[in-house]
Picture (cartoon, rainbow, N blue to C red):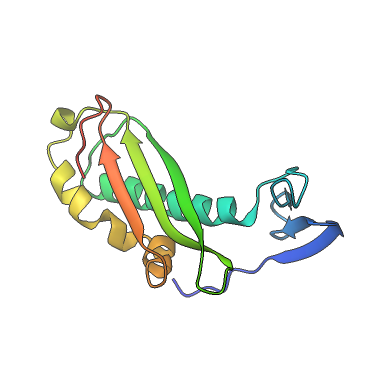
Length: 147
C-alpha cells in the first residue's frame, strides 16, 4: 500500500489548531496542554502515542484474523516519556503501549504465532522505532502477560 496520507492544519487561536483530514472525516481540534495552551484538545504527544497505539491494535486485529483467533476485543493504554535533551529541549524519549485482549490465552490456541509477528505489520510503530524506543506488552483478559 503506497499512499500519501495528507492533512491540513490551520491555527484557530494561540496554540489551538484545526486538523482537517479531508471532506469525508470531521476535523479535529488540537491544543497544547496547560500552562502553555488551554488543553481544549489533544496535544501533539498524545496524537503521536495514539497513532502508535492505534496502529499496533489494528495490526494485532489483523494478525488475530489471519490465524482465526477470537480475542473478544482489543484495548490499549499508551504513554510516553518526555525529557530534556542536551540542549534543554523537550523530546519524546520512549513510548510504552500495553494491549489488553478480551479473551483468555487458553481460548486462543495460536496466540503465540500472532504475538510473534503482529508488530511487524504496524506501519506507524515500526517507523517511529527508527528514532524512539517503543515497548509493547500484551496481556489476556485475566491479566496474564503474553508478551
